[in-house]
Length: 70
Image 1: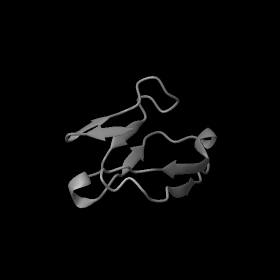
Image 2: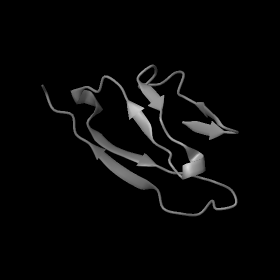
Image 3: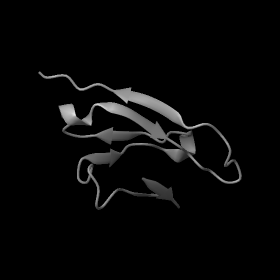
Image 4: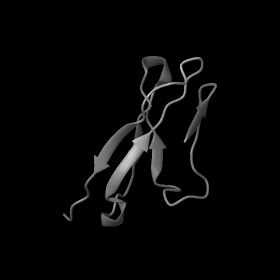
């Protein structure tokens, strides 16, 4: 994902194409995304690195996604 000048640019040629939605609000410090139609193959650890000049230093955050059958 790339967010610049109040516009989110979502992946166009990617495994998640058409299944992700930007739900964040940078003005509130929120860089949230939503994964639609998650499947068992989406299980894993995901990393988010935010670079907001001039504060370009910091540690990436990680989250673990666990998808279970219905």
